[in-house]
Image 1 (cartoon, rainbow over the protein chains, first blue to last red):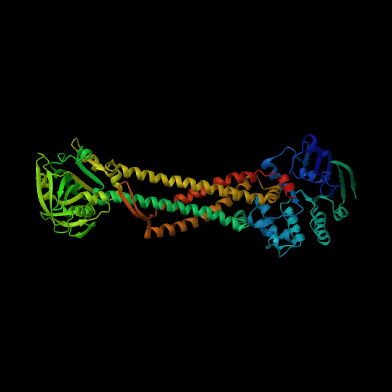
Image 2 (image 1 turned 90 degrees about the vertical axis):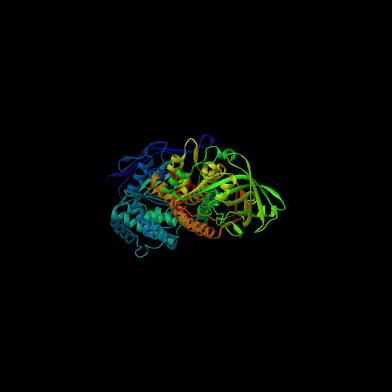
Length: 228
Length: 405
């Protein structure tokens, strides 16, 4: 199997002197294509920081971050934006979508950034909506969708660009239990059917139960790594 | 199109703020259109007052005559000049005049005055003497006719038909000469100096009074297009000016008005700069509020791959859309407001400025007000929006996502 994500000795701190906090301390992990992985740990353990560094939203102080073989640790500006656009899909905790665009337009937006032709964009939007079970709701704006439906649109948007991995930061945090499970089932199905790699940062037991691998962080260090 | 839709809809996330910002810009444009319309109207009034009331758009004299109005400095032979003026395509009308200082005496009083000898027919084309008539008749060529102003009539305690004696001096010899006239008309230009001190008689009678067979002290000229008068390089000025004769534009024989007009033009610029400055503060404030409200969202769209350049363009596009909508509204409001005052005028009471009476100014519409000014407003808006746009473009996704959560 090929490695989609590889971090080598990633170190990141915030603040200086007495306020200095080490968020990640020499974190080295490898995630293979098709894995369904949850990064877990108590608050302040460095989960979100690790997810942001893997996603190119933040740069480590030192160490390497290889995504599909490309080291993004030192990338910045447009090159990093373009890399994220083409290789990484993001799902955040909430307010993922642009509220003034419809569900279809939110999904289309990322493909517009990629410069794909309009006909192709429209076709793929319908595919993505169908994939997450939102046929017929594409013209609705986020405010007209339930929390679970909004997160499904976020999944569809993350998938639309054809990324190598999808990073999800507490995607079920604002959903009730049933809606959260339904969303996770959608993502799990995508993982199994399309071999899409998912990496979660979470406290949610439902995600932990469904994850095939759990990476446990404490005080910025990997203290456990279980495959199931 | 999607980006355009996004920018347009972003404007209506907070409709009240967008409308207020748009109002600020459109009212600034309206104010600028009105200000410029007022300035143009005032300039037109002042120029018209100078050139149409009596003086003409151009004047031809013996060189030095304007220094102290010495009656000896007359144009001896005006045939060559009038032949030139008759043939000049740009000259609409001209009128020769005799001008002399005189003592004006009635049965009851005496006054100093400036007596004009005019050709009544030609004078109709260059001045508003006939229009200023408030009593009696305009000159018809009669030997004893005289028109005086209302103030002079009051001072001399005369009315229509009363006798007046003019005492002047011969232009060549300086000998005293006198003649008797009967008040045939009373005029009112509205300017005290003119209504108190000027009197008009027929040209031939005036020549007889100052002892000239022909000749004139002044030839007033009106061009076919008033703008031609302002061109000091115009052939009329170049070809009629000699060692003895000078042909002058109103800009030269009435430099005070030219100065006031130049100042008026600067006033549009000054008001424009102040308005633009205030409007730009409003735009910067509004754009920053809009960006701060969307801080997390900018983090998300940057995270999914939107480049800083695309964010910069999005914010500038939002500013451009506000500017365009504001300019359409501002142009419409400006047209309606300036159009109204073009018809009805703006009352100024009775203001006298550089010898011109201003009672009502009628604004003037000009194409540049509706083309150049909106372009300035749009450029200003984009310039003002550049700073918030750069701020938005530099938002770090991780910081935005952390801060808002």
